Each structure stands twice: as C-alpha cells, then as structure tokens.
Image (cartoon, helix red, strand yellow):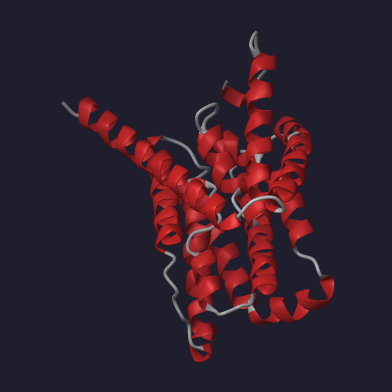
Length: 261
C-alpha cells in the first residue's frame, strides 16, 4: 500500500488500521503509554515504517497532550526536564538528517531491538537511581539517545521511560513526565518527517481520522483499568512486545542471511 493509497482493498486496510489504533489506545488507557510502540509494531505489518510513523502523528500527539494534565504542575516539571526535551529534539532531527525517514529492513530490526529492550526492562522491574547531581549532564544524553531511536524506528519510549523512573518521580509526576516526553518526541518526529518530505497532506488527513479509534481505545482502556489489575495487564503486554520484537529482529536477520547466500 505504497503512499497510503486506497486501492481495491482500501476499506479492509482502513478497518485494519483503525483496529490497530483501538488496541493501541486501549493499552495506553490502561498503563499510560504504549500507543506509538504498539502502533508502529502492528502498522509495520500493514504499511512501510515511514508511513506507519506518519500515521501515528495526530493520535499520538493528541493523546499525549491529554496526558500532560494537570497544567499547574507542568511548568516546574518542564524546567527540571528541559535538558531531556532539548536532547530529544536534537537527536530526532539529527537522526532524520542522517538516516532519513524510518524505512527498510534494518529500520524494522531496530524497532524490534527497541521493543525487546523495553519489554525486558519492564519484565525485570529493575529500579535504577539517578542522583540529582547527574541530571544536568545525563538528561541531554538520554534525550539524544531517545531522539535517535525515535528517528530510526518511530518508537519514543527507550531509553526515556526507564530514565524517568530512575529519577524517583512519584506516580502522577511520572505519568505527566511521560506525556511531556512523548509530546515533544511526536512534534520532533513530525518535523523530521517534514524535513525528509515524508509527511504529505493526505497522510495528515488519514492520521487525523485515526484519532477517533485511538480515543475510543483510550476510553475502553480506562474502563478496563478500573476493573482489573494493571500490573498483570502490563506483564502480559511486555511479554507480547518481547515476542513481537524477537520475531521482527529474527525475520530481518534470517532474510539477510538467506539473501547473502
């Protein structure tokens, strides 16, 4: 489906993409993150990675803006994490300039690696600690790394989310900080795609339509969170992401091994 054109099976593609965003929105509603990660992983099975990254711009941005509340605590948090945000922007734009838009088999492998790292970290439940004196120089470096991963794969969570947890933020501040990083990453990725002329108006319109299923999924996820243990749901999510990441990396490695014979 090159260029996201709708051919004879256009309705089937639209339904499949909408289902992806319902699922991704549901996961975000339950655990507070995962919409771009799950969307990129599943959309990569339907369209090329660059198109998948372009599709998630509007749903990711709007749902992340919603996560920035409460507004009263946003400015102090932004001052503390300003270096991280600048690093994310710089890393994303530098990666977009050096690598181009997310595309190709090895971009798919990098996405798989990011998913594996994220899933293993979540399953191990490791608790890292960053001393306050190290934040000034470490935050920009983590931001640069996160931006590089974002530019290459469209995934925002690694290593930003483990780093935020290592800062010792309480639950509400952590959720808000994730929303802040995800919002900045989404805007930076949109700029990187525009830099590579990889974000046509037609894709923007389709991305806006995908906001509807994403919000429906978030509403459903919120109701599920009120009725079940988020801990067990998150563990199941991590196992699923780990399996999908291993499959994506193994598929690329196997294909290149076969092609090199």
